[in-house]
Length: 120
Image 1: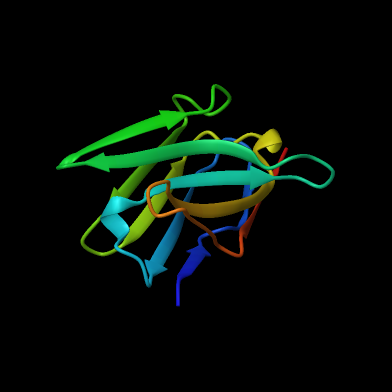
Image 2: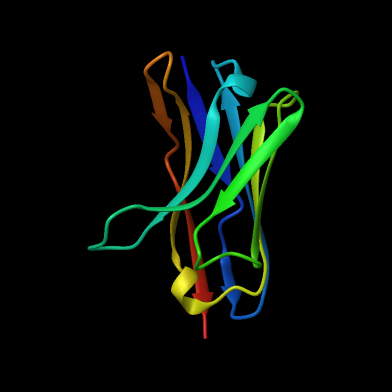
């Protein structure tokens, strides 16, 4: 059974920092592209950051709105995904979801989400 479990969401003041974590089980973690998405009520889920491992090199990409403030990382041994969020803004308020995908296997998995609220 595949599980993605997020943690670290909280209420924080603007300018503050949070670190989200996602622990994966039931998959060969290293061969999955891992992403963080976020969603606010009435809006589509938005890709925040993505990271792919090719050999020992990780390749990360970010949405323009978070570049320079957020850092995505992964530990393929522990099967964990992290998102370090600095200089948070009220517009970062959302439910953040961990996502794992492998196109060759046709796999696509989501976590249950963790709430991040940034007060002004």
